[in-house]
Length: 167
Image 1 (cartoon, rainbow, N blue to C red):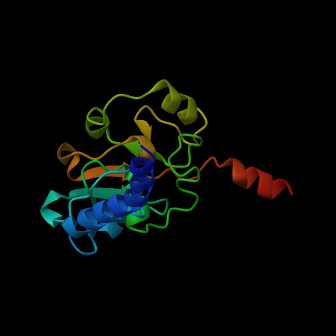
Image 2: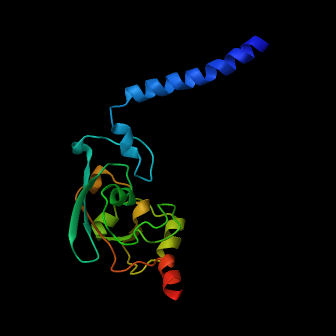
Image 3: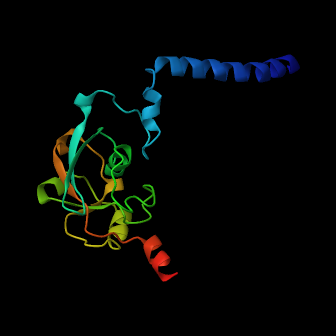
């Protein structure tokens, strides 16, 4: 019994290393890097034909067109595409702020999926709230959202700014 225990302890790291080698070898070179910047987990399709086009209208009224993978949140897309929306996603998608507040057209809003009570609570704190407001961290892309338009409000309600301004 003692020999089995000792051998098990010696073989466990070898098995883990072998598993990691097999897992890494099965993944296309460089594709493991694609999951490092987003907030959601899972595999990301590498082919561009699996992408969904999103049109953001920034605070200056400028249209910014990017592509995201189905399953990514809009916050993931903003981060992955390195879009410069000041203060956007301050809580990193933990549903603890309203800085990723976006406004949608009515027809797009109907296709976004259900809104949770937690999201509604955070939306109550959002600047420029509308009937078609959602938090970007809670909206996941699907192929049916191809070509959607998401407007970034003129300002953001970020508690970090109010602390900085008072001090």
